[in-house]
Image 1 (cartoon, rainbow, N blue to C red):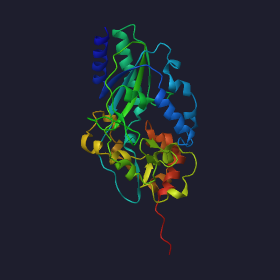
Image 2: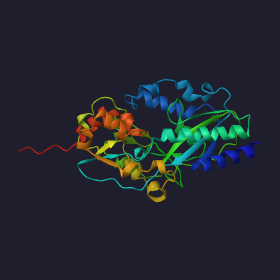
Image 3: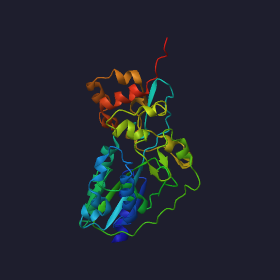
Image 4: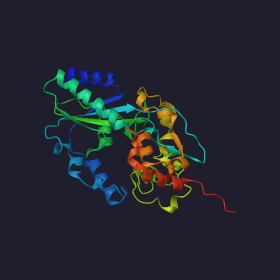
Amino acid sequence: MTGKLRESVVSFATQLGFDLIGFSTVVPLDIEHSRLIQWLNSGNHAGMSYMERNNEKRYNILEIFPEAKSVISLGMNYYVSVKHHNSPEHGKVSRYAWGKDYHLILWEKLSALIDSLKEQYPAFSAISYVDTGPVMDKAWAVRSGLGWMAKNTNVINPELGSWFFISNIITNLEFDQSEAITDHCGSCTACIDACPTKALVPYEIDARKCISYLTIENKAEIPGKFTGKMDNWLFGCDICQDVCPWNERFSHETQIKEFYPHSGKTTMTFSEVESMTSSEFKKKFAESPILRAKLKGLQRNAVFLKPSKPKD
């Protein structure tokens, strides 16, 4: 049955719009968890204290789902080739936030996939995660053969690049382990060289310097030392992916229309953000990842990035 079940997973997942499907055997994440602990001990997680909790679950997903035997890792392409408006008066928005919140899209599709598999295989039991629980989603994606962990800490697939969302299904049934993809970053340091705040070293990111963290997760003021170094990124940052040769060569348009920009918006003027009311913010960004920054955070970013008027 395992072969037919695997075929069913691939078939159903493909029909739902998933571009990458891989399988891995449930084992404790010894190496990956050890690296996580070192990263946390270095303070690289900045203000994301939630990452210090539930580490026994990150290490061993049997703590989450005791009957777990396998992990089904899934990747969904979200790349849209629209270009940013490179104006000093505009703040740029990370590509992943141009359309509908990916959590809403993936949760719906994962639920549909699990329901279809349960209907066909009554013994199938599973739970799913989309980067919102104590699951090391990138580690499982790498183990399931979706790609390799790159120097910019994203997972790169040799046929798709890194513009894809990762989700994982933990299941009680066994699947043959997918073949791992070896690291193809080689001697390239394009992502490290391009980061304007020097947040990257090979295979490690310091959130305290990361533009994405500073503009989204960060609850405090943006440190003055980053003035003039954030390349007008208002929400998130795509630099380390934009410069990656794998993305330059292999990125292609997503088939999921919900990921396309709302009304063609990929940037906002700083003045527009500063004058926005709470009700306007909630209406404009309903079902958008930008809600995560809250209006207060977005306005903080706009004030920090807005060009200073020359003195008389």
